[in-house]
Image 1 (spheres, rainbow, N blue to C red):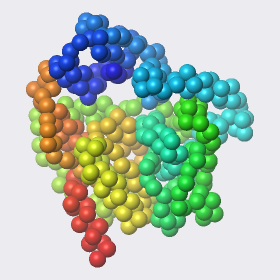
Image 2: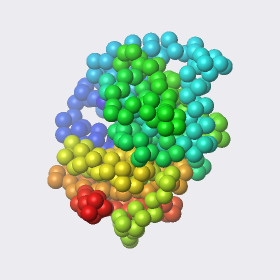
Image 3: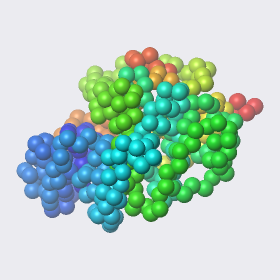
Image 4: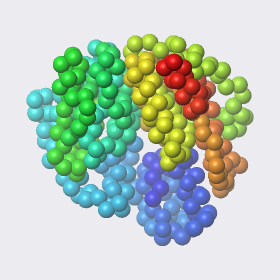
Length: 384
């Protein structure tokens, strides 16, 4: 199943072309796309199993309850009708003007008020049954609100630590049943704002999706930005194309020590890992992330590249200039040519990493390329 709203997303098209080249057979392939896209046209030319044409007025990150989310859910055996029913059940409340009734209105007001009060790091504590929901929330919040120098900085999968590692820039939101060594009551007692959202059944995720979409749109309205555009995403794509065509040239020369010395209260530290998601290094980097948080007492985020370019990348360039970016680019043990292109998957990945680093530097942001070994050495020296 190949999904792309525009029909031209380079990762989607590259994977599709690879599988078509190797196994063929249109009966094995379906696509989800907007009407009139090149992907839909290609699907019809090749006789694909089905073309799911989505409503074009639904933005990509708001499309979880459209064909883009429901078709793969159905194929995976999820009760998608129950997901939709949960969303329909909460819809009347989301049309109410009373924040005591309308949880989307209440949540949107809290998010926006927190940003205005300097608490723009929204730390998500999520029920293990739906823990990867945080990845979707990252994109929804970051890409929708991270522009014009403001925005919500979503902090997902950052295990809770001692109270003293958190500054006055945090808002904590829990979803469902969460069990952790630091109770939310303890955080609230220390003066941190805490919001708790109920989740009785994993399929209530349908309602959560709609609640968060409404809250994000309303938060954007209060912050005075358009929650439905992504002006800086194209910038990263253009930078990638430039590197593929002309090479990277001179990359920024900042060192790990230099950028970490510039960390200040209210900043966030973003680890960007262009490595295999199944590599053991991912778990090590997650541990390093927490050690960096505890050592520097700043919020941390973790993104796998190039996925995060389509999610938090907008916030990185267009949001508050409080990010410090540490880029780790892994070697590729295996590689494959992309049919119809003069570059491989590995070359594409490296071009995306180079292009993103150059773009961050052009925005005057604090960024460097580092390694797992260098990060480990830095922490060991700090302990010494």
